[in-house]
Image (cartoon, rainbow, N blue to C red; front, side):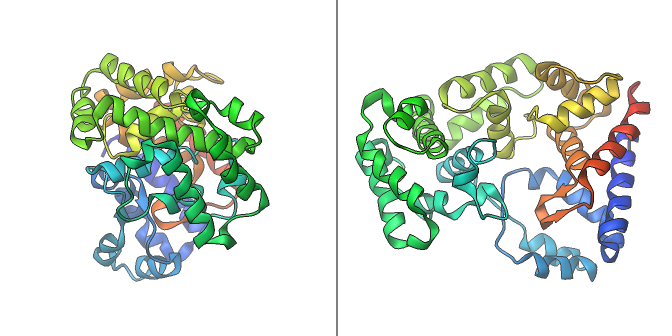
Length: 329
């Protein structure tokens, strides 16, 4: 176990002792499961949090592992669902994801993408709009008046308007929904135009980036350019949340962690990404593992088990202080 992982595990252990003392003996398992490459894809929370916590408290870790489920990202439907959920993992769409414990699992957004949804037909924008209308009709309690008006506005969009959030907003669709609708539709077009809705082709592109930072940057840029509303962080997050170990998300926690190790107040996002790749190589770790370690250590959100730390601001500050002396790794 290298020094970075030791600091991380000690930090998480101390946090659990403070906020969930009954889980002290599960601390190592909780850390290891979050860093396990088999658990890198976006999780799907099928079990109640109380059930999983009870199993953790009892040390029944094999049963906990059996209950962890993830998006099937080797299939195109799994890829599409991660693309959709990534559009919710950002600022500026709070009305769309409101009321959901995990904002990326907002039911009102995922309803059109359940079971054997027809992704090919969704390229027809009328059919795309129809799926949202049917979701609204079948589950009216999930939607408010703003949602209903926004879904009705989908039929007004023509041509390039269907991937232009600014125009969609001008035509009466709520700003949050405009971002989500146009982002998702452009994502469907991207996956068709570049991969013909073939998950293996996308994975082939990702695998070709292994141990090649420049190739990784090019693929992230390709996704960023092709899927509207994806910035650099969301583009990297989308690829990483498909479960590939070679991609990172330069979010605020990764940037803060890298800055702490460099002895700076902040660093540019691309510099943070470069640092993570170099650190991963030095420590013989996967880039995604370093990314997750920084995210978990700063945020205190142990998302596989729906756990959060008390006083997250102090929790992050303590972790950054612990990282400082490791800057010479």
